[in-house]
Image (cartoon, helix red, strand yellow):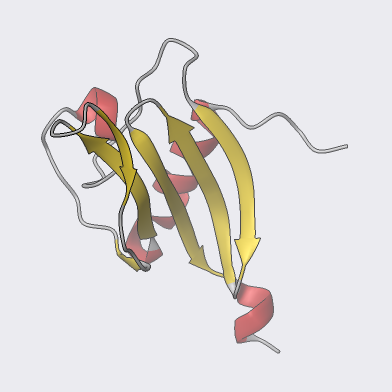
Length: 104
């Protein structure tokens, strides 16, 4: 049985993998339609930000709403391993290149 994934789990993942962290923003809030819209995206090196640290955890493109309204899922696909985050502001994946694939 897998342990429950929480914001603390994702925070620890970011802290341990900051140098190799990748982000893939799948959707984001669009004020023109007053809702979340999909965006064309791919994995890119996660850039640090000092804006809204409590909501971004220092990662540009990430947004955590807090209050128990974030949903987390383990992500392992196409040689990437990490976590997918969903909330009312959009969805994104934080991942690293899976060592199992690199060492194969």
